[in-house]
Amino acid sequence: MLEPRLATPAAAEIARLRSDNILSEPLDATWLAACADQLALRLQAGGDARAYVVDSPTGTLATCALGLVHAVLPAPRYPEGLAVVIQAVATDPAHRRRGYAKAALAALLDHLERDGVTLYELYASAGSAPLYEQLGFAADPALMRMTRFPASAEGSAS
Image (cartoon, rainbow, N blue to C red; front, side):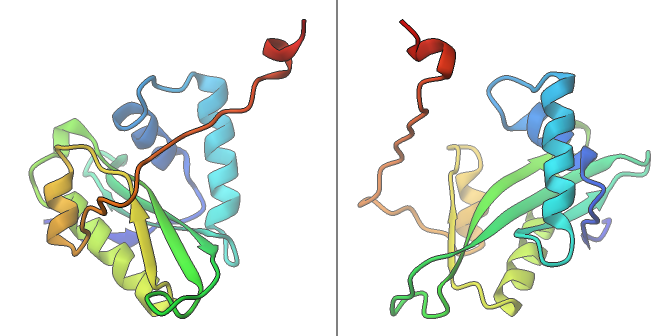
């Protein structure tokens, strides 16, 4: 099995995997470039993004696991006041069922724990929930995911 490695700020492949395998509609070239540019900045030293990847033999990525770290007010269960939202765990279809996603996510979680992160959150599909449960995540029945998107300038004009 190929080993996960810490991702470099060259983020186009992570953006591609997220777009192709997670988003309900893949990003067009403009949005894909914007996502990759922002992620490249955020993966630099001092940035809020952490990612582990598994390279494929073809020179692309087989898998990525991406987390965005942010500060929260401390509490007994997360005393350091550092949290992460696991933004993406994605595997190219040609490389699935080889343990790459689990290895990349486990490496990311180990890295984050060493950095002092004590609260981990993610959204899981029914198909991915067993992987996350194997790595210690549990459903929280008290929480419900809700989203809000502000009205666009075009949509709010009368």
